[in-house]
Length: 161
Image (cartoon, rainbow, N blue to C red):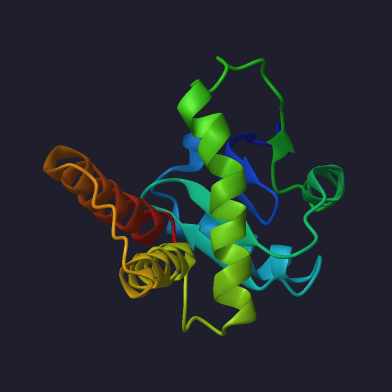
């Protein structure tokens, strides 16, 4: 019996999404997959989705080689690494920021995130400038640009959580 081929569709320091296209829609397979992967380690989160044919693993220590080896030994899937197209530069720049956002959320138990920290910091700097008596307001178009940027950053982080 040949094992289904699996590919990593997304990977960061604490998160891996594995796609198993050939088993998409197979609820029995993904139910067994979830039970068996739970035997590898106690992940912070382990989610399978038969409709999309994917597995999401979230933990502080994720070792792809260990996951691949375990999956193969349990006859779950064969993790292959294909040379993929490089991710856009913007994505490469945002990944470390996303990791900082996750650390802030973890440290504050979800009370704060990077956008709220930046909001407080920028507000404090503005108040400091006003109290000094020499406020230097940015031009209207710069203020709008910053406001839109903060909202977009917030949407990005909400989508990636």
